[in-house]
Length: 356
Image (cartoon, rainbow, N blue to C red):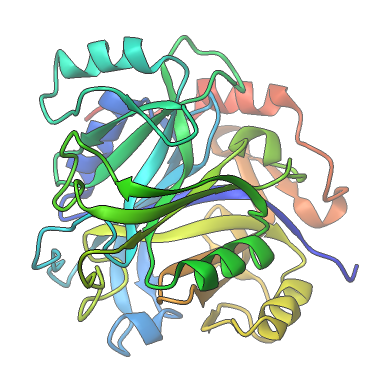
C-alpha cells in the first residue's frame, strides 16, 4: 500500500503534576471515563525532547465513548514536572487550548458552572458555533464547542477532544502545513479581532488573526469514534508570543502534543519529508513493532513551523477488552473499514474507570 490514512485526532496529551487528580477531574467534569491503556514505563525514544535522557512516566489514554479524540494524561514518575514559568496567553506558541465536544453548550455551561467556578460565559466562534472556556484544576484551558453529533449516546452532555487552538508566528505558513500535511484543507473562517472578550486567558482581548480549518470526512477503523475535528490557528498581532515549551521537556505540564491515528507510517514518513517536515522521533526506524503493554504499534513525531509537536500513531495490535483478552490485529483488517459500534459499546461497559 503506497498511500496512507490519517483517521482523526486520536488524543491530545496533557502533562500534569498529579496524574490521579487530573484524571479524576476529567472523569467528573468531562466524562473521560473509558481507559484504553495505562502504564508506568520509561520513555526511551523521546530523547530529543527529554534532555537526551530516558524518563520514567505514568500515563494513560482515556476516551469518552460519546465521540471525539482521547486524553493522554501524562506525569513524570521520578523527575519533578516543570510548569510553564509564565501565564500562557492567547496566541502563545503551541497548543494553548484544547477543544472539547459538547452536544448543548448552554445546558453544559449551567451544569459545570454549578460545581466549578473557572468558566467563562458562553460566546460564539467566528463561524457562529456556540462555545465557552473552562480551566481545569491546573489551569489548562478547554474550549467547549457545540457539536450535536454523538457516536454512542450515554446521556452525557460532553464528548472527547474536538481539536486544538494553536499559537503561530506566520499564519500563511501554518495554514499551508495543517492543510497540506494533516489534511485540514477546508477553510471555516479567517478573521481579525480579539480572541475573546470574556477573559479566558491573558491577552485574549488583543488583536489577532484567527483561522479555523476543518478536514473532509476521515476514514479508518476509529474514524467514527474520533469524529470531526478542527484546528484553530491564532497569530498575535500586537505582541511577540512566547513559546509555551521553551526550556521545558515534553511531558511537562500543559498540552504536550496533538496525536493523529494513521495507517501506513512508512508512506506517511516519505510524504512528510517531501513537505519539509521529517520525523524527529521514530519508535520503529527498522520497521519493528513498539510494545505498549496491552497494545503494540508505531509512533513518530514531526514539528509544525513553530515547533508544536504532532504525533502519529499506527496501531498494530489493539486491546479492545483486556478483561476478556479481546484484541484485534489491525494488519488483517481493511484499513478504511470502521470497527463495529458493538465493540465500543462493550468497551464503555467493561473498561469504565471510576473516580478514586
